[in-house]
Length: 463
Image 1: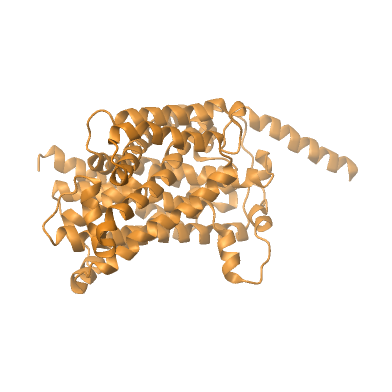
Image 2: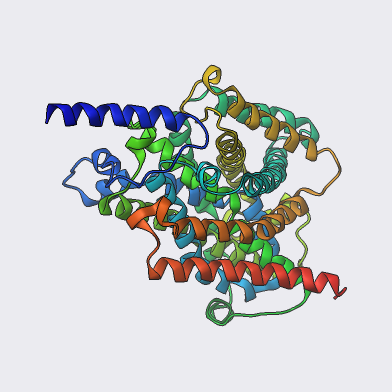
């Protein structure tokens, strides 16, 4: 027995050494690490227990309502009225399923998505996926940085061009020199800034009949403008950067709890998956509630008054006037700043996770700069390139909208890869997708493909 125990220790250490190298053989997942169960200490108050469970899923959901999302929802409400409200109901189960699948991949494999692709799929496929992600994330991060600067401009009369560089530097300092615990804590509190959009809709006195019809009766049009808005909404709710971020944050959570070795992180128990499902469903519900009420508020104010074009942050602030009156611009500014500071690190961070895992570099927000130079280097480069995008003369709201469209076009092929990974017995073992997750995951993939193909087809036809 002593010999067997010693052999097991040696085996684990040997596998860990192999795991640090590239191209190692994959082993079946372990039964579970009990990580989340160790993190959740018993507490007599159920509400307290519930909030202790919240983590990466809540952060992911809140970051989903980034300035790109807010801008896209405002454009949808102003241009289409209440007719796009139904998308909030349809996208919730789809996005929750996709994010849970990504979380499960991270929990069971002990790696982020790029790491899994590197281990099991051709490098050409890996690099193509990561390249597309980096391009989309950089454009999205640049648009969000510009939106933060525009929001500050609503409060302080300083030219937007002068604010972009300080905003980018401040966010970089938070990511590079702040600890993972600090970043997670800041992210959770910043979710409160999004509640203003929910409250504003009630003060706009919308037409209840039109709201109910727009919510429960889907409206479909093959007009290119409608399809572009549809793809943008799908792209900013079911976003590629969230796929990579969710899986990587599951790894970060386990590393923070002492699971530094890959073999220690492999596997997930039923309880762990249940906790994460609560977390993700809460985050996605928050995201979609905010989405619904932004569309509702802008439809009830901008669309009904004939202001169907949202050209600036000031235009979007009009939707908050029924709630805040003259303070509407301040309220919008606070929401945009909070959402932007929440989202930009997620965008550049998910790009850095993907690139680092693709090339086998050290990575993680819990690592110091000296130990993960390439990881933080990707964050810096993505932020600086995104910063530069703001100086080529693109309107901030249009930049936010079209960055969402780009995400909507990139997401479908990545979702195919995610579904293949989630059903790969060599990666997931007994945690391969069940029927329900497969139905929802593939349904989300088909919806994204259909919207993207429809948009491309109508533009090619010159419609």
